[in-house]
Structure formats: structure tokens, C-alpha cells
Length: 394
Image (cartoon, rainbow, N blue to C red; front, side):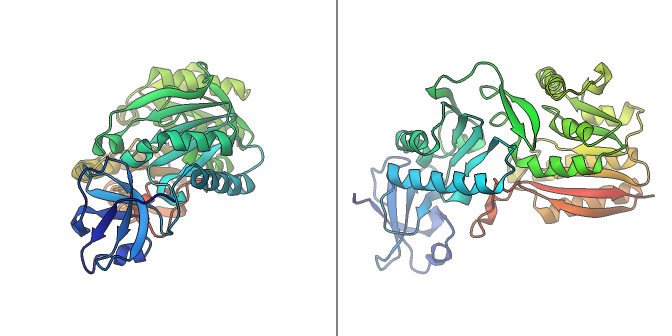
């Protein structure tokens, strides 16, 4: 087994690793050797030299080391193959059989920091979010091909994490013939088209599977507004669940085209007025349709702690507008996909919105990540999606 450079912690700073938290911050370090390439594998020891964990190192990040394992084992292709097989195996066991798109591996939640792997039928979309995952890219690619047996692999390494890690964005085909046309997937028996090359996130919001299913179960007889609708997935579930009408609103013309196609391949007839290209804040103020179920699934308003105050105001305003539009007994599905907006803060935002809207609001159900986006109990920072089903009263 290879030997790795040693990162030594200050006395008394080993507690978080003993508690299996995978991040080591710069302030905890007593000694870090020079000349280590960003992303290279290192060992972390306490002040006495006791081995604590093995992970990847980035001198440009406040998170100096991201720990992959607390065991003395090589981080080689075999190690990654084992992780991938385990991660995909239990997901296939638990997900519905009529679903062929899901998250295969979710970073720290699956003990592989910085690596995101999503399956879309016979192919994979992969994100290398950190210097460590990027450094191990070729080893990981070998493991992906062996463990997951994909026809193709598309890399979509973009976003704020890459920038924070000192990495440029990278979007390219890694393996096989990546389709130029949208890939057709199935989720809970519904069909969707996914643009794996240029769609939002990795092409589809896989983390909302269970929330869409919940909406489908409550939509019967209702007129539904799907705000920030993107591919129209919530609307597809709503109509399949017996909704009278589903209106999808998004700023993107491409998103509305994709939503229309998704309705068509599910045999759902929709009118042009049901696919609206508009700013949702203006739409909620100006449109006169009587909606009795509203879905708010906005993009991350708070992409950093510095943006949290303004983001909180935005979340409050959109929920206030929705509450004012709903009749007594109307349902509100409201989400935040920002890790900086905790479930507790999200509740406080709903409280403030309800108070200003002069409406009674009951939380019927708490929503979150789908089961293929697990939360590592030792890494609470991995929680980013919070949601509530609310009943809006008088």
C-alpha cells in the first residue's frame, strides 16, 4: 500500500475526526508539509502521530482535508468500485422498479467527498466538485465504468464549489457516446426528457422525487400552480393525480419547451396558457386564476452566508404572495434548496409570511431529500433541501 504525506493536528483538535466528521479545517492544523499537490491524498494524525483518517488535501481551501476513510486503506480504483457498487446497490433495492433515474452517489453522504454521480437510464452524469475528486478523476472514471457499466458518462463539473476550490468549470463527455438529444427516463412510472448536456443541475431535479409523488396524491380536483417549474415535473404528477388543471411558470423559454414535451410524452393535453414564461413574483401579483394548490420550488436564493439576509427576504416574499393567492383550505408546497436555510429558519420564514398575509397556516408534512440523497448523521452540513406541505386557512 502506498504511503501518504502526513497532516498533523494541533493538540486537542482531533475530536471532530473521532466523531467521524469528514472535514478538517485549516485552523486545526499544527503541520502541513509543503509541496503537496491540490487534491492529493494525505493522512491525518493527532499530535502524538496516531492515525485518524485518510483523505484529500487542498491548501487553497479553508477545508484543508476531506476525509474519505477512517481506516488505513488505499484510496485506489478498487476502493471506489466498492463504494459505487454498494451505493448503487442499496438504492436499486429501495427505489420503485419503474424508476431508472436516481442519484448513485452523493458526496460525503456516501463517504466520497466532492463526487456526485447521477444515473439517467443507461448513462451517468458526474460532478467533480472538489480538488480531491478532481485529482482522482481518472481512477474514479475507471471505477465508474467497472462498477456501474454505463453506456456513456457526461461530466458536469460546474458551480460555486469548484470556484471555492480554485477549479475552473468543466463540461465534457468522458466516456462513450453521450446523447445530443434529451434522454428519456422513467420516474414512478412517469416519463421525462432530460438534457444531460446543458439542463439545470445534472439535467433533472432527482432530489424531489418523493415530493412530486406526495403532490400527485393530493392534487385530485385541484387547480395547480407550479412556480419555478423548469421541466414541468410537478405539473405532470399533478395531472396524473387528477388535477383539473396545472399551470407551469418559469422564466426560461427552453424550460417551457421541455415542460410541453414532458406533458406530451405522458399523454397529457395542455393549453398554451398552461405554460407561462414569466417572472413568478409578477405573475402572482397580476394573474387572476383561482389556484388551490401552489408549488414553490425556487432556485437557491442563498448561495452563501453573505447572501442569507436578502435571500430570507426573497423566500418570505414569495411565500407571502402564494399564501395571499390561496383560498381557505388551499395547499402550499414550499421548498428551499439552500443549505444555508435550515429547516428551523424555513419555519420562521413561513411564520413571518403567514403573519404578514393574515392567514392561518398549518404544516401538514415535512419534506426533504429523496432517499437517494441520504444525509450522513456525522455530516449535518450535507442537508440542503427543506420543504413543507402547508394548509392555508382563513
